[in-house]
Length: 114
Length: 114
Image 1 (cartoon, one colour):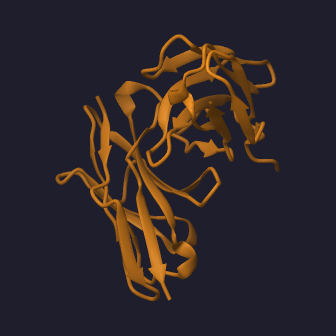
Image 2 (spheres, rainbow over the protein chains, first blue to last red):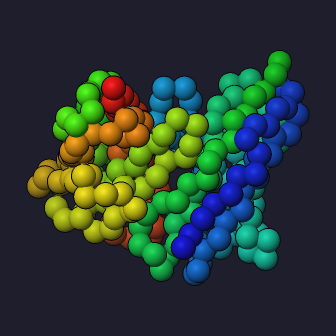
């Protein structure tokens, strides 16, 4: 069975500082990995995905993520956080061998302070 | 280009009642997935429809059923509602063919069961 862990319930960062949101995964085969962001009373917005190839993936709004197969991690990063980045972030995995369903982590709330 | 739309936005039902939620996928998409997001948790996969058939199902009871129409829109039906069914129900659409595609989410339907 596939699973995703986001070890931090909340991350606090000052505006302009680097932001990292951690994610580790477990799948039986090769993973497809995704990051989504959710603002209050809204659905999930796609940020980026890793399918294959370069381990560093660049996405929307200046976010990027690094795939690390040996550590089974896919941490989300942003070099300089904005107050508007404050939201709920979800990591998700799709196991190639297990069909099309996405399995999500529990989410990490990011609070960027001015 | 319209994104994923869902109706209604909010819904209040009583225990034991039945509810139908509706979803229209993003233009050009042929696959619809449904997720349940309880308060403070990540979305949980309910099922996925493609070519008007249920292709994959998560760990949800038979009280949860669905349908996909020829125009790719979809319905989620929940019978014999329980208090624990209170959640945000998210619809996501994607394209079945080609490289693994991200799922695009609608704004969700907030269901409250009293």
